[in-house]
Amino acid sequence: MDRWIGKVAVITGASSGIGAGIAEKLVKEGLIVVGIARRKERIEELANKLKGEKGKLYAVKADVRKEEEILEAFKWIKENAGPVHILVNSAGIFRITSLGDGNTQMWKDVLDVNVLALCITSREAIRDMKANNVDGHIIHINSIGGHRPGVPTANLSGASKYCVTALTETLRQELNAAGSKIKVSSVSPGFVKTEIFDATFRASNFPVPEAIKNYLDSGKVLNVEDMADAVVYVLGTPPHVQVHELTILPLGGGTVSPDY
Image 1 (cartoon, helix red, strand yellow):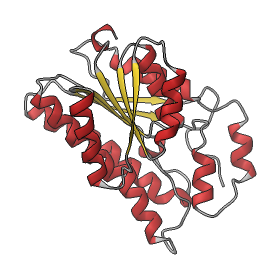
Image 2 (tube, rainbow, N blue to C red; image 1 turned 180 degrees about the horizontal axis):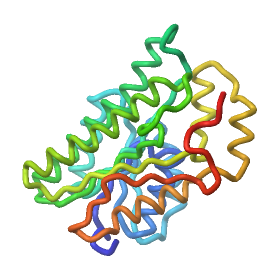
Image 3 (tube, rainbow, N blue to C red; image 1 turned 90 degrees about the vertical axis):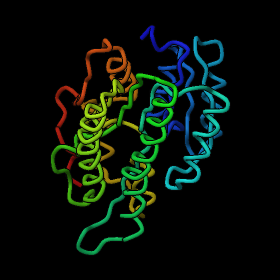
Image 4 (cartoon, helix red, strand yellow; image 1 turned 120 degrees about the horizontal axis):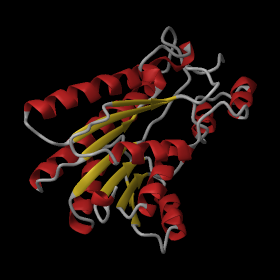
């Protein structure tokens, strides 16, 4: 990780959960981290907590569903932080709905955050890396649901993660064809205990099912620190090594979501 000390890492969805955990870990590793999220104040709280660590955390407010706000965020980064070396696409949402009788706006929200925002931020990071001759690294926080079917009510959410799997491979081939040394990696966890479940069911107008609550408390799930460690592992590989896909499951846990 020494080669990344003092370099800029951009993390979307950095206000909570996996994104916040990765931000904290990279600051402690000595990186300059720019956290992007709607809830800027939560990133600022984390930044205050991390004062005195080797690196530094900046908070930038942006709704990744809006391209103009993403572009403004990258403009701020260029003018205030420096060249982008790492992008971690951690922003993601899930919605509980159906395909046969689903909510169109929920579908759009999932695609805007999980697919289009990931494409836009990756494009902007690559443009910045190329402009500054940076052999950087792009990491997509994917899901085991991006490789095998999950539960029916998470239909489009799972499909959006299948898109992330395909986009990771497509970008790898595109960078290879261009002779670029920019790396791209997908990190696909099983269940990770974060507040996303409360947010998901609240936005979908459902209470969190007891089966989900019990599963999260079963000890057969991953935690945020596991994901942060995984990202550091991927970043810490030698320049000639690219971890294209890293799948992480809890010992003794299932490979897909519990039935709800």
